[in-house]
Image (cartoon, rainbow, N blue to C red; front, side, top):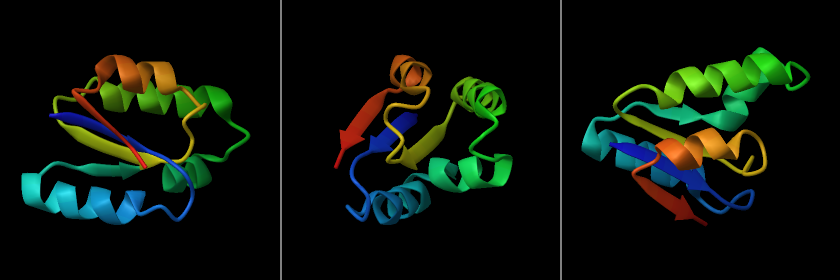
Length: 83
């Protein structure tokens, strides 16, 4: 199952993603944390990372970065939650 969670800052996305991931046994990727780890200035690396993740059979990606590489996430998601 592939789940995209996006929305405003402090809307509960990460909390919801953690709980849902635990219930479903699906890995959770917090996009904001990954962008900090990679470096927000490294757009190509972030895009490549997201493209790799969305190829996996199961994932939950949360973040308020709806404008960043959203097409790959939307195209691959089975479910999309907007907070």
